[in-house]
Structure formats: C-alpha cells, structure tokens
Length: 177
Image (cartoon, rainbow, N blue to C red; front, side):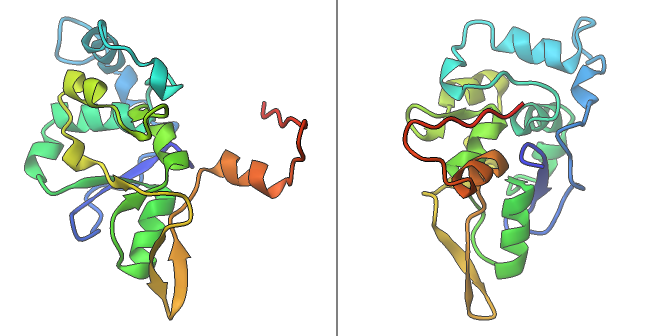
C-alpha cells in the first residue's frame, strides 16, 4: 500500500478514509474543458520538469490525489491537514509522534525530488498544492516516537524494505515485476 494515503489533521486525526493506489477518481471528468482530472494535471505540468521524481503522476498517487482534494475544496476546509502514507499514519497513531515521511516512501508520491531529497517546489507550484500539506522528510532510521517504551521508526517503502531484507551482495541485482 506504499502509494496510498490518509489525509489527517495536524494532530493526526483522520480526515479521509485510506485512499489506495488503485483509486481512480482522477480518471473521471473534471470541470475544466472536458479534461479528466489526470488530463488537467498533465496540462498544468506541461512546462515543468518531473524527471527528478523518477515517477509519472497517475491516479492513486499521493501527489495526484492531493491535487484532486485541493480542486474539490477538501484542503481549503482543512488548512492544517497533512497527507500521510499508510505506514506513516500507523506509526503516528501508535506513537502520537510527529507527522514524518522517509524518502523511500516520499518517492512514491510523484512530488519528491530524488536528486535533492526534498519536495519538488516546481511541481507543487504548478499543481497549486502547498508544501505545508506534506509531512516533513526525515532520514531513514529516524525515531518517530515510542510505543510502550519501544522506539518506533519512520516507515520505509515496501520494495525498498524487501530489497534490503534480501541481503543482496555486491554485483547482484533484484528485479521486481
């Protein structure tokens, strides 16, 4: 469920149900010149480089969903909202800790600049989504908080965790199809 998200208040209270990677609301027609929501995103990103994200915005990704939530008035209604990936939401609920994201999850949003390890300000500006709706990016291994005195770390991307757990050696390759 790496690409899905939950919109939460600044205190971590859910404002939306989980919106999964298979969500297709962006394929529906928007109120703009007969374009789908995804078509509208592509139009808005026309002159913006997205190569540093390593991913194309599509329906079901956090970046595209946030655009839809903004265009449909949800973000305006909840100015302190943050978008969290499912793992980050679970970690925050367990620990009552900060609203944080690991780069391996952030890269699945379509908004993360992998070259500079930050949210892509040009994409956010083109989509009209303010960075304040995104969690702070922290290094892998950051402790978010504690559950019954047990440290709980920021969640990591599912594929990245699987590859790390495979103990690949130097010169070996993992292919995920």
